[in-house]
Length: 394
Image 1 (cartoon, rainbow, N blue to C red):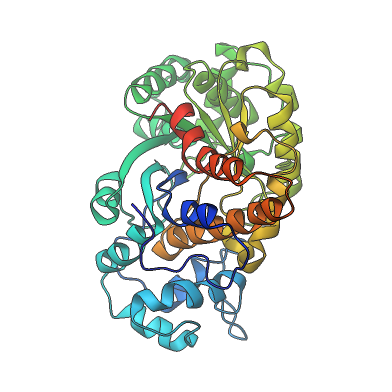
Image 2 (tube, rainbow, N blue to C red):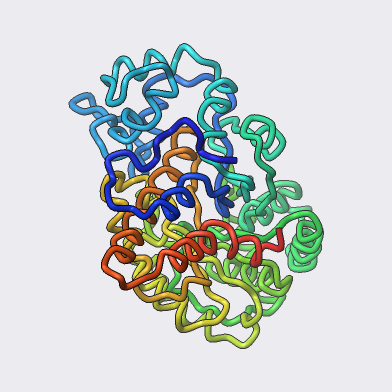
């Protein structure tokens, strides 16, 4: 599943031939990713889809093309749309808009060189492709990650009003999680968005959970949204008990997230609990807290992390982010992800920038005789493929 006709290492000098070949040809496992938009989108939606912080329309005085991912799209994706590198933004949009969503996916996804996509299917702001479509359009295999908050919200939505018995919720949720564990490779929580990490991580009693559900029902929200810290603790501990990997969003996200409350150091009370030991805790994205995540991956046997999402959004600076991610944590505790969502450009760009960054950083260490080339190639395979294959039992 090589990257093929993209010269991933263009403009980089001094990378040993073997490492360059490995970085270009390695078939990756993307351990956290979403589907692509299934329907055509307009330019405003396109530009909003690669602005990670603001949910608002792009202001009239600017274009999101004038950003690190915007420049990277024009550099790396434009040739796959029949354009010259660094094509003008208007030309890029015109070429993109002339293709169907499925054709865009076929042109871009396969070029990422991903052999297996581990997909979070719980976040759908509009119609996006599922695992079957991703597999067909990319040529890679797919597995599913189940989002805990979505499971809880669907249970409440299915039993609205006074007839719903809050006391049934704990057992109903445990049954739903057990059912999901039979088909999925793991779970994900977005507690970072809902409460932040600075909550009481003591496992709540069923009575406490039922009382929280009763408050939730009484809120009369048009769309039930789990934001109660008691319920967040409950859903996390329920998933942990399955011993499947638990993905945790950390750091960078939309502005409804309180960034300072997503520092993974605030998870220490959870990570120190005996009941969590034995479950792989997968810290996702982590920027700007990737160094804290690296410390936690060193300090706790069951903690892993990646710098996906951040790599796309810092663009040409991604090699620095990648270098910093390699500072402290054992290499057996790091994984590759793109966190691509909606736009297939993000799925491709994550892979291209990660390959370039890893090759350049490790190539520099090999040139300085601080690493051997054999070790560099081995660690590239470990982070790009091996760790995910082991942790998710792929």
